[in-house]
Amino acid sequence: MSDYAERNQRQWDTWAPDYVDSARKSWASEPTWGIWSIPETDVDVLGGIERFAGRDVIELGCGAGYVSAWLARAGATVTGIDLSEQQLATARAFQAEHGLDQITFLHGSAEAVPLPDASFDLAISEYGACLWCDPHAWLPEAARLLRVGGELIFLTNGILGVLCMDEPGYHTTAGLHRPLFGLHRLEWPDDATDDSVEFHLPHGEWIRVLGEHGFQVERLLELQAPEDAASRYDYADPEWARKWPSEEVWVARKVRPPE
Image (cartoon, rainbow, N blue to C red; front, side):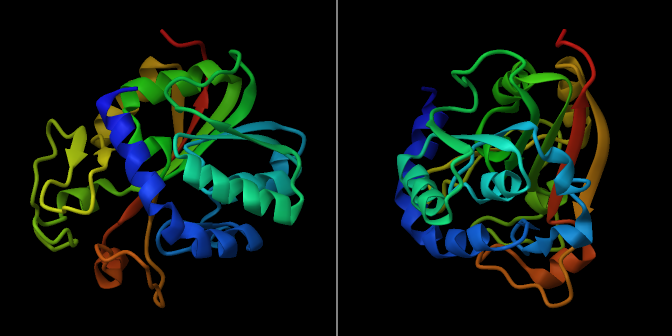
């Protein structure tokens, strides 16, 4: 594995116990998105979850697997893949509890999925591969796995929120704290408890890289925190996130084989 994959694997194996309670709630709930738990009925990320009945879906960086659960309940056949064995242990425990046998959980990297080309109709990632894997590695893998006409949906930090996060402290502010140009790999050296590596691209770079791998962008949803928003994450400021997008959702379609 790459250095960042090893670091992210270790970090998420450490963090996994802290996410069991939130995973339990998410497995039992209707779909909600992101750090503000915005209901699917308010943002329509999936464009109607029922349309995935009978479809093949892969969740890239599935973590505790609740997105996989939502799609399986809608009738999809789902595969989830994640590097963290501890996160997958949580996912499999809740899978057994909820009896969702149509989900297959794999231990592995979303940058190198051990499955054939053109196996899926939807690839989805909520703060999974889209945040913790290099876009220049996981996007071509997503393109390989999708059939022509298949969809890619991913939710990650809003680019403005990333630019406005201060150091040290890591809170969103009204000022810019890092350049947009050249943004790619991001680490948090002032936080001794966080050895993870994130990846962020400017919007123009996302569009360019998606296009290189045969995708056409259909929607970019910039999410606004609801009036009563609350989050478990210290960096998140609901007042800030009601004014500016702290999260964004990309919806793209594979319209041709990659270049």
